[in-house]
Image (cartoon, rainbow, N blue to C red; front, side, top):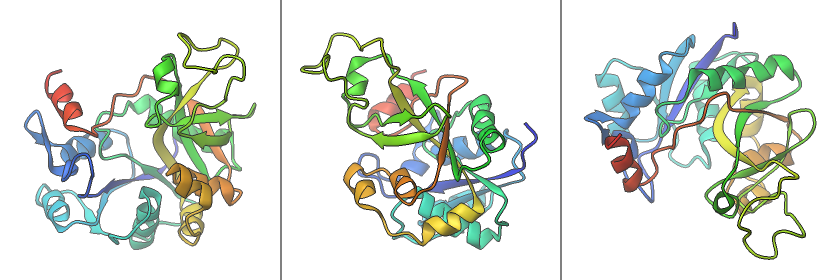
Length: 251
């Protein structure tokens, strides 16, 4: 991969399940530092943390890393990254990787696969990932986002509901998944062109976005194409709950 790109790490202090999440310590080191140090291994031309909280901003800068303050009212991480791209004065044709601050150990191969989509599919606005779902419970879990794709590695729809819906097998929760289709879990690693981020920031949240609570649906509803490819390596579980913190600390 020879693609030039920037990394933005969005970091909000507020979290209903884990308040102050970016500053929670994992094995003695704050989560946001895990993310920054992991992102620093990916070869980006620049890395910046975009936050809405002075405590996070001060902490990141105190460790020698760049951080910027962004609006507290942003509807999504993509909106925050759009403001970041404007502040950083990144050019329209540059790529930006949304490196999730609560997923501190994203495999480099998955990042490269995401960025490579812009070469393989030059008409896309967003690149992202999925991994196959093998567990029936995951298909019916609203916290596991599902995606249906077309034959050209582009996303058709994202949902918290079980999609595609198997008419004959889903009268009740089945013991195993139908073998006729691969169920795909969306992985929230995104890359964008800066020109798309500018356009996205001008769009109002869409009805389906608000219904599903999935920001990528705003882009789809506006006609933007989302390229998607399978993870090269399994994605580690993100840090969303106190149980996730305990599990990380015990590994």
